[in-house]
Image 1 (cartoon, rainbow, N blue to C red):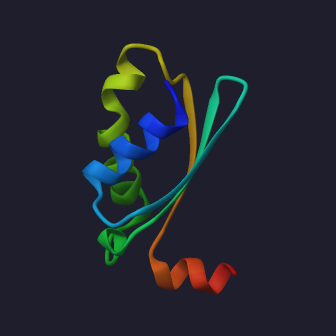
Image 2 (image 1 turned 90 degrees about the vertical axis):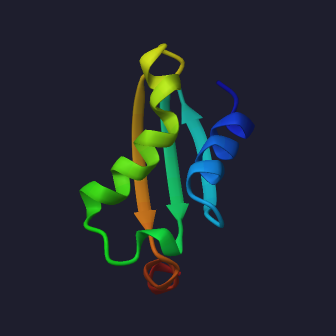
Length: 79
């Protein structure tokens, strides 16, 4: 699966999200920033992202995902 398709799938599922994605071998690394994560615990945030990628994971296009899910405020604190 191409990075553009991954980004589009996440942005469709989580509108107005900022997605940074890259592969290291077969491992997908994601950083997703969205207001949609406000008030959610880390597991719920990841579930939103996994939901967007479920078809690609199920068919084997994506083998492993490492992700960082942040609200804009959390992302600003890391900058």
